[in-house]
Each structure stands twice: as structure tokens, then as C-alpha cells.
Length: 162
Image: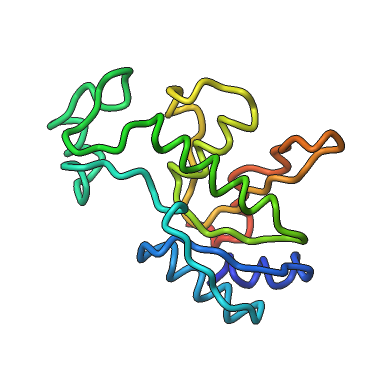
């Protein structure tokens, strides 16, 4: 897997590997684990936002059945409220920041987008501000003042051209 090879080549100082337990992210983490030689630590807080009754639907199906989704107050029945999701993202981010060294966390587009909005100070409801590609690399670092800095976003140059 290209992302695993890229991380093994460019990030030799990784000290821990974290992953969402959900299938696609965990499968990517398994490839990274093999490439860098670290065990995977799973954390449910790295999961994608729970979209309730829209789970398993395509984007077109979601827009057709739930036309207000993504707009303020446009929750899908059973959907995790964005405030709860943001608190979850912030909690696991704080926990990861308390650790020493370089950490790889394999998660999902909604999670990464939420984290990026937090880093740049955008309102949490601006859910479409960042579009995250599968198997892209987004890197946050700790700045001189202890703040999170978005170092690189959505890097995909390691993926084969379509």
C-alpha cells in the first residue's frame, strides 16, 4: 500500500501507531504496521462521525433522502451531533498530544476535516471546508507556543495516478 511505503520511507521516527477500529482505516493501519514495525493501538474516538440512518448509503443517496444534511440543524435520524463529534476529536487529540514523539493516527475524512477546522480556527459547522482524500497524508505539528499547526494537508503524491 502506497501510504504505508511513504510513511516507512519518510517518517523513520514514528514511536506509535493509532487507528480507528473501522474496517478501511484499520486495514490501512495494518499495512502501515507491517511497513514500520509497530503494533496498532485502536481507539474508538478515531472513528468517523456516526451518520445514523445514512450509514452505508452513497453520497447521492444521502443527499436525496436527507437534503438538509450538512446544513445547520440538518441532522439525519440517529446521527452523532457535530458538537459531540467535535468533543470526541478534541479529546483524542489531547491524549495523543500528551505522548512523546511522532505518532501516526489512521482515521477518516470527517475526523481529519474536523481536526483541520479546529487547527485553523474555523467554525465546527463548516463541515465542507476541508475535503479529505482516502489514503492521503495530513500532518499536524506542535508549534513553538504549543498550538497545533497544520503542516501538510491531503498530500496524495505517493498514490498512483488514476
